Image (tube, rainbow, N blue to C red; front, side):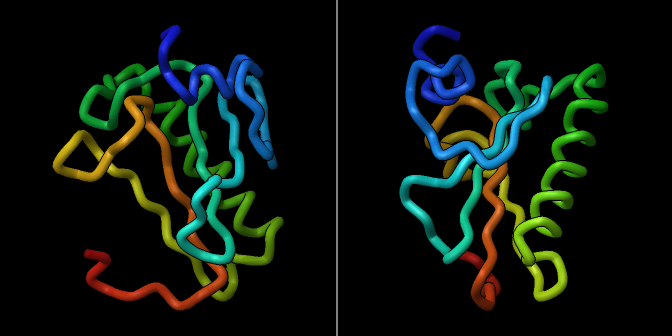
Length: 114
């Protein structure tokens, strides 16, 4: 998608502090962190939101979850704990129309999130 901010990051057109990438996924530091550790994990393939996921996306979405776990372990966040957030569409707080997962850690998370 040519006007998508995250697609531009995937294509290298917009710089990002990338911490992980493979053939399916890119992970980078959030430019407006909400916790000491705040990563965004996105698929390279454009999917607008979780509401747009199809059965054929199951392997990709599962891979994203495994990458998140790997990143949490590698960055020392797995044992103390971390939060994974997916905002879906406008009322869910999604600001960029490309499915993405926030990985937040480095502080105690409150509940409910707000």
